[in-house]
Amino acid sequence: MAEPYRSTPVFDETTLPAALRARHTTKAGVWGIVRVLEGAVKLTYLEPPSERLLDPDTPGPLLPEQPHFVEPIGAMKMRVDFYSEPPGG
Image (tube, rainbow, N blue to C red; front, side, top):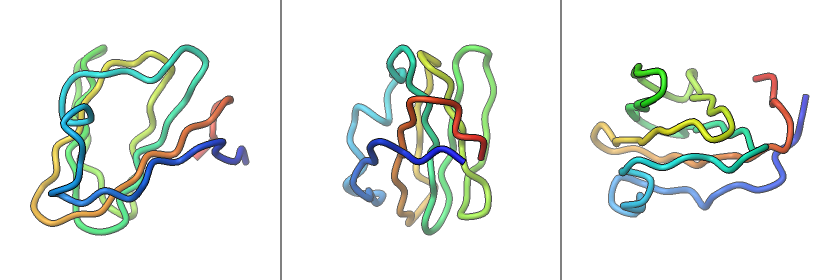
């Protein structure tokens, strides 16, 4: 399984940056996984449109250049791991 080359700090519902709450994308050639450590987060994909409810047992995969945003659902802790190849989980 691929190892992340970078991870964000752990954010909670108050420290989650506005940039992650608004439409943004991963870079070309970069895969991501939203990992919820506590609580729940709603991940909204814009292309193709869909939503996923993420929790500690349900990570949120991100394809390169896939537009998306996240919204905390109450108290939560999350981070994003970045990969230079498909992470496979």
